Length: 96
Image (cartoon, rainbow, N blue to C red; front, side, top):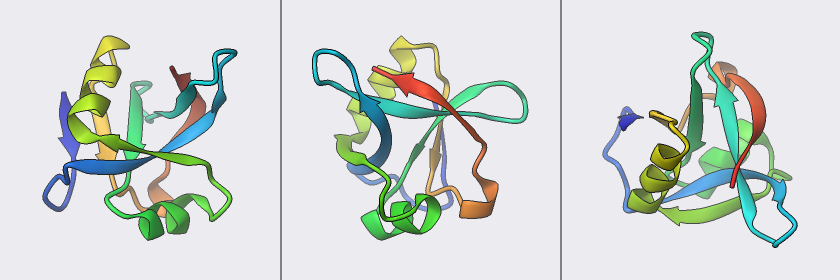
């Protein structure tokens, strides 16, 4: 698992979500990079998530090791930490 970050990795992160499944579980929003690879965006602070994605963006607080485990289970190998708003890759579906 590669975590792409300019700063130290916090123990918990704010992760954008795309709705819920039929059992009420939140779906982590996935990003498609220009390489075609899927990634997860994670934010070290709520204000950073809101700046990048807007105050209306739904989110959940996740322990960083748990996010790595969930992403790995779906063969997602990159977590982008605090991506800039102008660097947001195309959004796609959700990880449940």
